[in-house]
Image 1 (cartoon, one colour):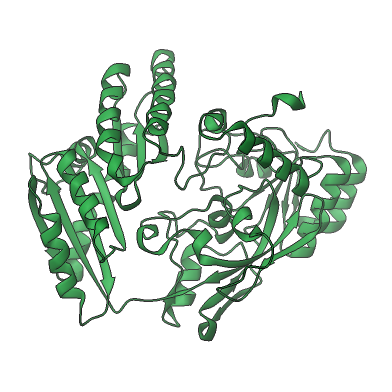
Image 2 (cartoon, one colour):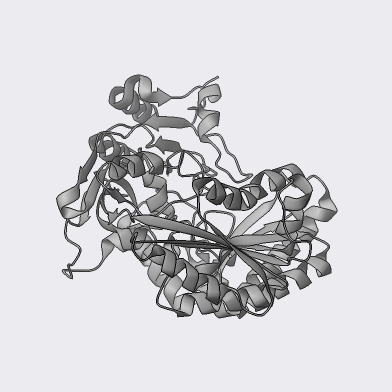
Length: 468
């Protein structure tokens, strides 16, 4: 069965001429491109497997001419429904755009096509003694294009920053099909507005990224891992604040709350103190000469009143054992609630105790178990609401609880998303964080970049009431 019914015949003919066998119109082929890692899905009318910048530019011009929605995606690892073609139209997959992966050690940069995975880039950079700091959990499968579209970061962002801080320039196609080149190969430059940072995190609503120039960082000589257990959330949060207030910044500072620890105990045989109410995973990197003294300094700071113990790993086997606690959580969550809600809110580090305490209160009020973990060093916590979406009562309670979660986060001067983006699932809440003036300016930018409104329509920003 073909899905292309409703597309203009002239557009279909032009797509066949442009893509040949890389144009998919059978429903069985297109369904695989109609969903991401959220629970949303929709059947695209066609899927284009682009390989070159020229194909993307031609495709965008065709869609603009015929006013057909165009949704760009990598491998669909996002969690917000941003690449779901809810309004029909065409899905552009960039996973086959793999023409360029060049490492330039002399200038500490890489030129990369959007279809390469994060892991492929890391392996290529490591051969020259470098890495790209963003490291999402899905690095083995997520693409560079998706990392840039979402500003996806990961644990290392606490020390090294997000894609916005680690991208020098982009080549992209605007919604009118024009080629846009931003930034360059230098780490400094103040000519004009910073369109590079504007496009990163815009979730495909302003332009389609077809190549990136990324800033690389030298690999550290040594690394140390510590695990600290605490008898209360407050003690763990104080440790986070103390660790982030001293000159030695960890390259990862991960947090797990009491619910997360209980789940790990139930679904694994890992030894954890029975009285532990919070856990920190701390990772340091640096020079071989200084790493051991740095680790001892961090150990002293982490061992505050309320700390039940700090374990320092000294071998690869010990490091793997400590991280096994954190890695056991995701399988446990999938077993308990395969259709959970996973939000990635962020608050100032000093507000972490208030956030976790507030979430515990919301869990009791709505009768919805909440498991919290994430990147404590920059206040980015993954809030997991566990419920059965097939139960109408639980579905309603979870939706009410989620709204209260967002209200709590904003009351603590936080943000609705630290790295997952807004997509479709959170856009109804965006006007609670952004002012009307900011939203009007953002909608004006959208119209400037995408005059026909074809790029990922209905994503990231609330619908404009004035648009009717």
